[in-house]
Image 1 (cartoon, one colour):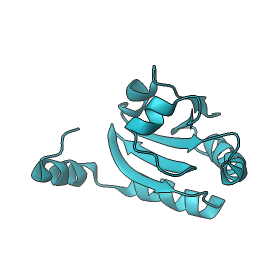
Image 2 (tube, one colour):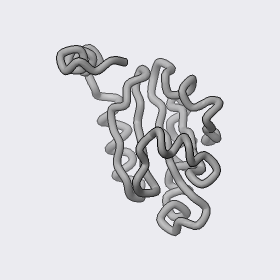
Image 3 (spheres, helix red, strand yellow):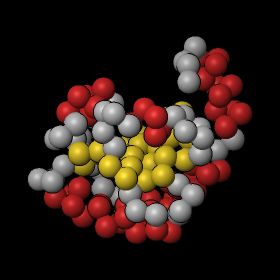
Amino acid sequence: MASVALTGANFAETVSRDGIVLVDFWASWCGPCRSFAPVFEKASTQHPDIVFGKVDAEAEQGLAAAAQIRSIPTLMAFRDGILVFAQPGALPAAALEQVIQAVRDLDMDEVRAKLAGSGAAR
């Protein structure tokens, strides 16, 4: 599966789905973004059960601001509609695989219980 372009129109619907959604915030002028892009695309073909979305932070400045993006590239991981990971910086392929495995391994009942205890909502 190739990555999908995310915009203000489809971002919330996409990340709130059940399952895993990885989001890459990027810009065309960003060197680290350009080096991370093929790593992200290759992972998208290796993990067809995961949605890989890309947000052009220049074209979607409102969305980037709403997501509190301060540095690009920034990778976010959502699972079952819950943000479970966010980190700026280009990742090498092995590190991206570690993130994917860690998100797969999460006990989502435990995550939801922690969120409920902290007063955060889905």
